[in-house]
Image (cartoon, rainbow, N blue to C red):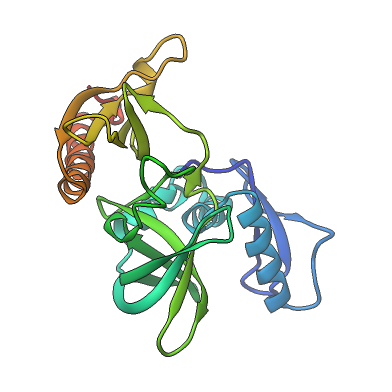
Length: 269
C-alpha cells in the first residue's frame, strides 16, 4: 500500500467542520462546492471521497499536518503515524473478510488491531489471518500491507458487527489486481520499506512452495523488476514469518543507515 503523500485530499476543519481540500506542498486549504450542512455529513463526504481516491488515514493525517505546520516536520510523513501508533487488540470469534472486488466473504477469526486517532478508528489484521483463497497463487488480487511498527499488516474497516460477528473489508489501496511473477512464483503480497520492496510469492509447481525476495526500484533499469536474495520455504506459516522477519530487518537496517549518515537519507543496498 502506498504511503506517499497524494496530490490532494479531503478533510474537515477542526473549528467549524467545513469540508475542505488540501494540496500537497501548500499551506492552508481550499474551499469546495461539496461542503454540506454539518460536521458529521462533511466527515462522511471526506472519508468517502478519500476512499475513492485511494487515500488512507495515515496519508490524510500527514496532509493535515503538512498543511498546518509545514511539509518538513515528521508529522507530514504518513509512515510516522504507523511507527508510533499504539494499537489495542480485539479478538474476533467469528466473521468474514470481504473480497476487495467481488461480493464474496472469507471466514475470519483472530485479532483485530485498532487505534483511535482524532475520534477515528484505524484497524489492521495480520497477514496470517488472510485466507489462502484471498492471498494465494490462485487469487485474482495481490495484498499491499502497511508497515505498522515494523510489521506488515493489512488495513481493514468494520462493515458489519454485532455481539458475535465482525465482518471486515480491505481498505482501498491495500490490494491490487496487477499480477507479477518471479520465475514460476506468483507474488501474493508485497510491501515498500523505505526505498526497498519485499515480496512474498507462491508456486504449487515447486518443491519449495513459497518464496520471499527483495528489490530496490531506484537501482533498476529498463522498467524491469529485479528481485534478488530469494528465501525458499515449504509451508505457508514459515513463509509468512520469513516475510515478516525480512520486513523488520529491512526497516531496522534503513533506520540505522539514516542514524549513521543522515545525508544518505536511507539509501539501501
